[in-house]
Length: 334
Image (cartoon, rainbow, N blue to C red; front, side, top):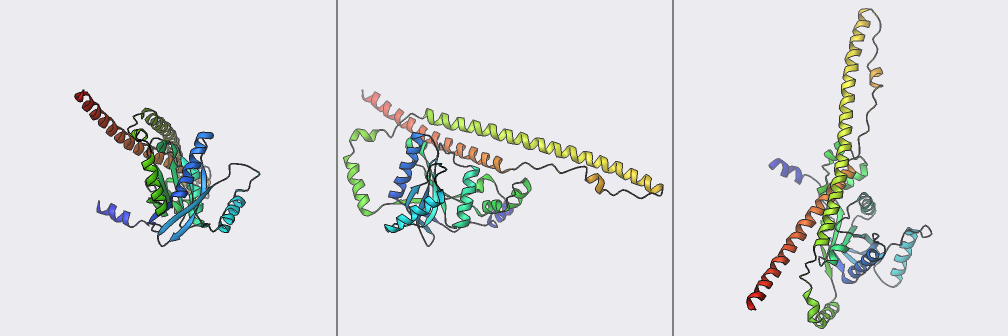
């Protein structure tokens, strides 16, 4: 245990940003964009985050959506024009990251990893903010900020996803990302307005917090987990086939080398020149090692689904016990 703790402490830790402070306006613009894309065409919503870095705090003060996939629009030129126009109206125009929508926690992918790698290598303080539309629609506000760990950045910099390389870098699905605490901050006038709006909400509108329609959400989580488990099993089968082929090739190579040694001994006994072993090695080309990046991402997705199911079920059970107590009290009163 002590050696494991020392090994964990020796790993580099990202201390660039301690927490993210997001303005309420930026958060609402992200939520609006993600829900619109989810309702219209079920596509992933993405956009740019603008703000400032103050000491170890990243302040997100504004955002704007990326254009939809269109060959006639240059995405880079579009972003530059948007930031230029925001600067003209005295709005923070510094690029500090990007945001993306997620569906029932499914946000981890190779595309997201590579995009965040490019962001962090060009803008050191950048973060990616993930907003889960499905969970938020069920009353679980899910707005989280992530950054790549130094180990994940080193992995992408070397572009070596073999098992040996990942083992040397100590990279696993557990330490691909580090979650940064996110705080939503509003001005005093916004807080006063929200307090007034809360008083204006009818009483019957505040009784939906005990929504028991959890079957569909739990079913989606379980279906997604089953798909990821099948994919991980396929990747494991592929890697097992590689290992079996490598073992067979190594056995055949040893057999050929033993036979070659006997032939060389016979040649030397006859006074002939021995044939070098390189001739045998040329017959056996190394089998390409399957990349381990996709299995690691799938394992991370399974872990995320398991955590969401555990959290969702615990909160749903609490709702069921509360409603049961309320129903028993109602029956006893009658």
